[in-house]
Image (tube, rainbow, N blue to C red; front, top):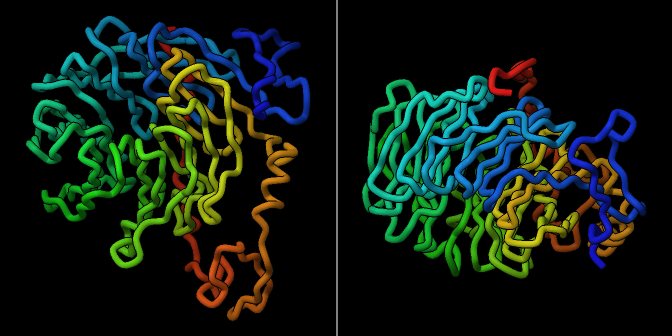
Length: 403
């Protein structure tokens, strides 16, 4: 039996006395099931310091959920006439962009629920993403296998790159600095487009052995992860281009079916520190939590009745969101997952040995697959001093006019 087959389902609206996570045994990861969509849920996000949840669906709606009650507090409806392929919030959580098979891209005010603008294109819009500075939106269009870049202030198409790929673009996204756009495709290639130079700076043909379904940058922009129908995940060093010499990092035995989504943790956001974990979801209905440095599975979550289409990890790494073709969203509580017997046994099985750092002379763990002759310094001595500057977080809204 899997770790979560016996998970305890909380009521949608718990009472004050009942507003806590339950589980019948310590060997489980508690979870909640969020049910309000009538079609496949294509996107899920944490908002407002993890107090809200945003989802989009093939039912043509986007919903804002309260984290505590796990119930919708706002619905954005009636503007898309077809399935919504993706929703993506701005970094300040004030607006969101949605893309649809109705051949439109829309920018919304999250508080009022109003559509600020709608842009039509010539084909189905398969993906959308808003830049970190909220100045541009990029979307993938299936008609010409192209990407369209839209100015958020004027709702004008500033660039349309026709035939950017040789087959359908499955996902496109900005890097954290809003300088590059990554796109992946059914043609099995990865492309990075430089927004300022207006040209492709990195092209990786045959990056996977099947359709590439998703891509995501680490929050410091140094790494790019790609997920594929070949059941694998790859991590590319796009900052130094080191992958050209030694190839990408592989996450072996990722899933037993096509991998549909991936996302890095945010702990590498404002420093040179790499992301510590990666989250993936797939056709096998599973969600996998990965240790990025050691490249092993920390945790496998099961429970969805159909393909997992998207995953999200809270900034605190205490919560996981997963959305599925089964029309539900699951919220998983990871606060005590390190105490799960299966996780403990997996750690022991992976194993490590101690090596002495040549710089600080302190012992540090080296995984059994690492080359101790190459890794002569501990993790901290291999890194420059991280920045101490942290930007302030947006305030959580008190009341939304579309409640």
